[in-house]
Amino acid sequence: MILTSLLLASRLVIQTQDTLTPAAHRALDDINYLAADAREGRGVGTRGLEEAGQYLAAAFRKIGLAPGGAARSYFQTFTIAPDAPVAIRTNAGGKTIRNVIGVLRGRSRARRGQVIVVGAHYDHLGPGGFGALDDPDSTGKVHNGADDNASGTTALLEVARRLVQRPLDRSVVFIAFSGEELGALGSDYYVKHATVPVESIAAMLNMDMVGRLRNAKLIVSGAATAREFPALLDSLNHAAGEPRFDLRASGDGWGPSDQASFYAVKRPVLHFFTDLHGDYHRSTDDADKINIVGLEQVADYIADVATALAERPGKLTFVDAPPHQASTGGAGYGAYLGTIPDMSESPGGVRISGTRSGSPAERAGIVAGDIITAIGAKVVANLYDMTDALRSHQPGDTVVIVVQRDTTKLQLTAILSRRGS
Ligand SMILES: [Zn+2]
Image 1 (cartoon, rainbow, N blue to C red):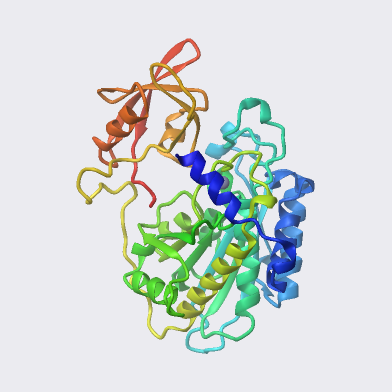
Image 2 (cartoon, helix red, strand yellow):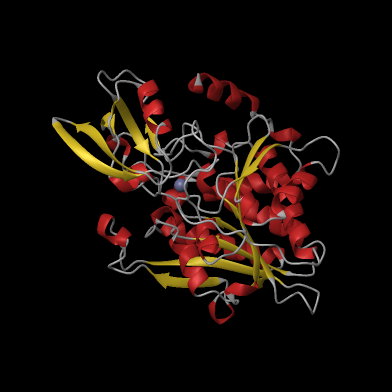
């Protein structure tokens, strides 16, 4: 059923070039540049990632944003520590990467010291391998990451182009983050070495995977991180009468992307997301599958949210939540593991085709090809058993997952979390 609905939906997003607005054409140019094979999948250490950074800095300048990086440049450059956790699993240790930062200064003397951060990561998986979900033999193929996250980066430029039209009270800092796929390295670095005091960040809006709008469904996680967010998001969604999106706004700020770095320093955050699809973290996440009209609609909406946040007189009321908070929604929804099941038959268990980045499954060491045969005390013979087993647990529970890997039976330990949406 999942596969069928994905196929049907992808047919709906096909659009002909001549019906596009000039803004959509411009966005298409951006995404085609960022997600071209020549950018080498924007992996850390590639020339393609460097070129993408240069392209974004040039775009920020053309749009009219002031340089927000070091020494009056658009770049905030840093080196991945050779002993960072990710360096043990990849060859990223010692490599230099950079965030690209542009500033739109606020017009209100009283409020321009407060900033709204609008961000999106521009790195992706390069040739696959670490973080990728394909078969091992597609490692080496360029992973273009058109939706993840050339789409958010393109939307970042589109939001900036909208906001420069009219000065706002608060300042807006636009950041294209690097190193997200290796564990939100760029945003983590930014909050620890911010070019503005972290306390002055009134809110952070993150766009990660906004290029596959289907049936107008827009997920906004982090809506519970400020008391004012739900009403604000809802009213802007209905600003023109008919709802713009089938909006799913909820949750804390601990999702697996850059907003979590800002939530960790107690800033209200929102993450905009047009949902997962079968090309996620695979070499097939290409620009021809992007719904550019949908991306424009999402950029319009985020520009409206950023404007409202930059102009509202008062401050937001931050709502804290601990990581891996126990579910308060009662039984039934269950806990989150973050595996991507292989839909083909696998006798005696559930074969896994991959794990979601940053998920409990990934942290537990579950890898593509593993067959899950038990979760905690429950035997897992099929997907239904697996769903039942997860339902019987609460987020925060530590469980032993039994997997068959080739001829070996392994016992892995996972700390279950809460479903992101
Ligand atoms: Zn990703």
